[in-house]
Length: 414
Image 1 (cartoon, helix red, strand yellow):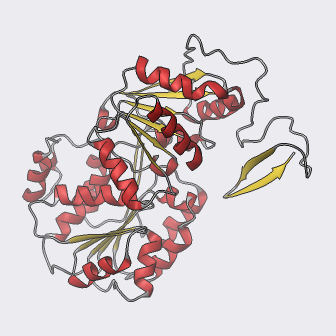
Image 2 (cartoon, one colour; image 1 turned 60 degrees about the vertical axis):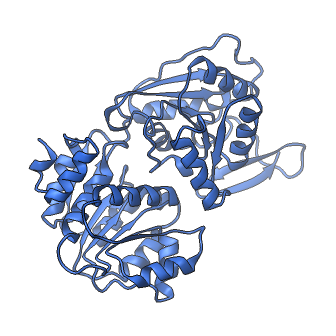
Image 3 (tube, rainbow, N blue to C red; image 1 turned 180 degrees about the vertical axis):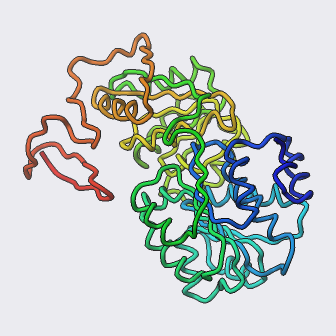
């Protein structure tokens, strides 16, 4: 099957061919036709499968006729980076159509966005918090809205946006087409889907939470204090052209990027404490190849789409097995081959076991000469991040640790 067989308008087929795409991916083959028919849809697919085109192309197909400069389509996404990438897809696939779009996200001024909204647009890409700001100020109305997309719904849940999403949907017209995409379907997302969708078509490609087949995964045992030195060694040994390195904390991202920079690696960092302009600039430098290493927290684990990432490195093993799948999904995009290396200290071994249980396979171990794990390493952590055999918390004492419980972090001395 080709894109021309899906029922898309000639202008869209031509735009897709301009990008040298000829054969749609499985989720595109299954999802685009019902979306063109006006059906509500739930899309569940592993990352890197071409999901964005499943909603961008039907939106543009619908908007090419009828009134222009009226807000007829809305795409809600959880992060600023994902908003920018969806907007780029809109520009790419809509290059032969006279449509106007805008992006409203946090971290930048409200006034330029308000002026853009008042000028009249056909399609809006937004993050929930900033869209609510504009809605409460009367800067946006949904009277002409026909299509709504909720992308990365499970990420919305993780980031605490679900109530904002519900407020937005209460302001939308009852008669509309709604498309929901989520890599996983926890109970809260299932309930939300029942509230906002009508007789949806379910499009599910591949096993949930399974990494792309083209990702070569390995774990590298190493002591905590040797991690950054092992990473420096691997960056040279593996000849990584574009490496995306994940840390657990913002402070850790800054410290690691400083260390790599001092050791001759062109590096940039992005995390939640960076301004939007700094994050955009760092991502663009990485995308253009001006820096070969991008250090990031999980703000980049979903939605980040940079062509040609050769390696994803988990400097810290993620607490959530699902986050591991999303992180490594930044490589081997669209059927390509990529590499995922995870640096595992003794404390993190149970987290790896939880990941292996989720993905249904053992991850090969690669021991690097010269980076032996010290025998006196700390006790291993359980999958929730609590040390096995921890003594009860007590006030006072020389050491302090942070333990994540739910969406909160509790600080205790022991």
